[in-house]
Image 1 (cartoon, rainbow, N blue to C red):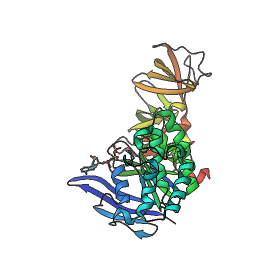
Image 2 (cartoon, helix red, strand yellow; image 1 turned 90 degrees about the vertical axis):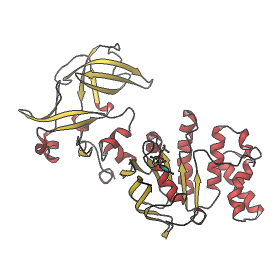
Image 3 (tube, rainbow, N blue to C red; image 1 turned 90 degrees about the horizontal axis):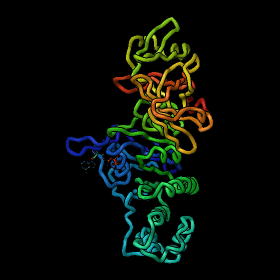
Length: 381
Ligand code: ATP
């Protein structure tokens, strides 16, 4: 059982705090992603788990053993880095065999293990070649094979797919997820690519400025974001977020901009104690898929808009709309909007689905009200 337990992890470089207050328990066999923008402390956190960087404070335990200050070789972790770290003078076989030779396994066992992992990673044909003679995709497979060949307690992967083209990345996402589940080794994977994390992870840790913002399943991160940052970081195109004033009207509470007002569900308003915030400016979030559009304004589509840009992606259409001072992106099926104008300036009407509205505190960024239609993992189960 290789659970990873991290308590109050801290790393400072001089006066600069790169990582603080990281508290996580990664379950045995779990595939966990560290997700966040460049410089948020993902790699530093991973390097502390690997033993390549000494923490300034806190504790790391792997399989119940305190490894906080242990040297890397005593931690039994397998790693893949962004640059793969393969030895150029060795063949692929030699590279994969190396961690086993260091452990002084006999030659027959080494050959058996290397051949088995080469079959899994589909690089048997390349075993006698040197890294310089391989494509980016093959190099990545070799690096993963070298990690898999050891009976490690934990796998750590730092942006291993960053050198692959989009098509290969897509293939490798599915393949790596499959292999991780097959071998069942607890794995932490660093990425700044939200799609990678959303499609592969059991759970995601979203980091910003050295701190954890949320640790949850991809679905919960997407549907119940803890902050405006998390909400905007996952999902493509991004969630639309704009300022509104919460205003009491004869229709109950509305979220008003200078140009339009959105009626809020009154049950939701009550459940989230929004009356306490009447008169406040807050941030309203709505994902592109939850805005419907049509040709003319009516009671069903009450927000007058003009088309700023039309972006067909093939499978769906993105419409960027100007609603007064607010700009929103909507995502629609190609059939639903086939009849609509596509030229800049075309008048349209928008309808925001009130069941999918989020509210965030303008000062702290924290979520004030989760969308009425969103569900927690407990509710989903
Ligand atoms: P990226 O995706 O760009 O690799 P990251 O989220 O992995 O980013 P880290 O590499 O962990 O971020 O860096 C976190 C912060 O710590 C950054 O501001 C970085 O400049 C700083 N940092 C990292 N290593 C050192 C070091 N050895 N000395 C000083 N500052 C460092």
